[in-house]
Length: 122
Image 1 (spheres, rainbow, N blue to C red):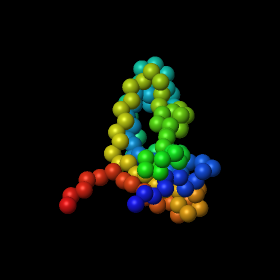
Image 2 (image 1 turned 30 degrees about the horizontal axis):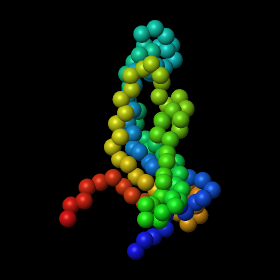
Image 3 (image 1 turned 90 degrees about the vertical axis):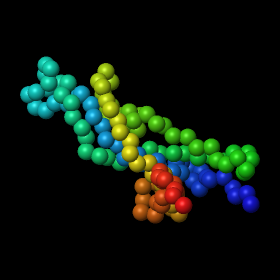
């Protein structure tokens, strides 16, 4: 049985891909230590959820499925999150794809898990 493409919200992003991140970089300082060699102090963030909007569109063949795109640049989604010309290590250790729910608005209480990363053990 063929089901129509995944496209519940024609007016905007349908899904949210949330990655759990831990960033370590060498662009940290505080107060008077923000000059000289202290600008290159290494530090690690607390773990954070990084939501990225995913927009889906119908294809001409319902057997193929929807075409979905996302902007995967951290700086494009959160400007200034990654400092250029500094080393940064990004650990990604959980991916979760949420559907926008019945109200078709991302980030509200009716969002539901569409897919998640994991292992299947029969």
